[in-house]
Image 1 (cartoon, helix red, strand yellow):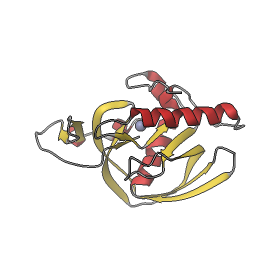
Image 2 (spheres, rainbow, N blue to C red):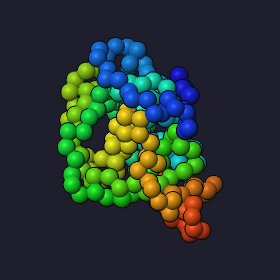
Image 3 (cartoon, rainbow, N blue to C red):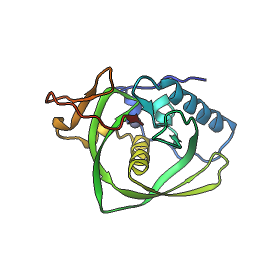
Amino acid sequence: MILKIVNIPNKILRMKSKRIGFIDDSIRKLANDMIATTLDWDHDSEFGAALAAIQVGEPLKLTVVRNDFDDPKNREFTTLVNPEIVKASAEKVSDVEGCLSVPGIYGRVKRPLKIKVKAQDQDGLPIRLTLEGFPARVLQHEIDHMNGVIFLDHIADSTQLFNIDKNGSLMPVSEPKKDNINHAKQ
Ligand SMILES: [Zn+2]
């Protein structure tokens, strides 16, 4: 089932998501619907990299993350229940990210380069992930959603904001210069 994605400035996105106690079929159905919704959203030069449950109006600690961010034709996802960052590197990197709940806008955000995450899979089994680079960024973005945080909250400087045009080029909001960068959204 395709679900409706909640966009800013809807206050639902500011809610704190609850830890999932028992993972039942309703949680697994929600995860499957979130995957279908992310795939349905894909269009032109943009594709969905991940989706948090709060983005479909469910304040639960649940996210679905694409397995391959470089190949939009790969339709496989990993479901993470109750993900939490247990360690983050001191080293931070700046990169452009977007959000399915923030149509048409991208922004440059500085985040830890590497993280260790613990979570459960959709059967409740423990998962441990060590992530670096873009996958680490995606998970941090999703866990932010669970705390009511949007990537725009990390951007104080409007020169770090971009619009996307029909061809998938990112245009700085503040200066007319093209910048082709990764268009995966979370
Ligand atoms: Zn997002």
